[in-house]
Length: 137
Image 1 (cartoon, rainbow, N blue to C red):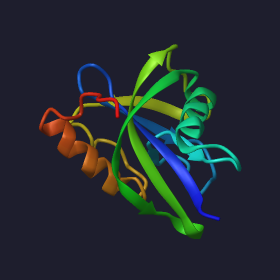
Image 2 (tube, rainbow, N blue to C red):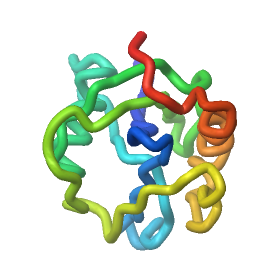
Image 3 (cartoon, rainbow, N blue to C red):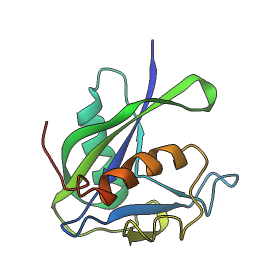
Image 4 (tube, rainbow, N blue to C red):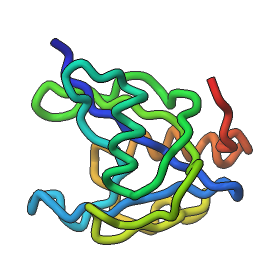
């Protein structure tokens, strides 16, 4: 069975990307990532992404188009990322140390975790060419 982690490249109306600072585990604490998490057995990927953002950020997201393909992670996991927008609620750092909105020219002002860097680069291309605006599938 495939081990999948889902991530949300949450963008706002100004084309800024949401970055979340890890609180744990200790070896990842302080690093920045896109919010998300593991897909539970019997759960589809979009449902998992919505659930994870509700748990981690206290918001309901609307999921848009996928960013890239499968991104390899340690332990045999693959990361799949979608563009998203906050549809309802106010962002809270429930499971993170901090949250920041980053414009295309600020994306590297934080220390991204190595697994998230290629995804940030893919999203950056969309922000730079105006395609970071949210589009539904």
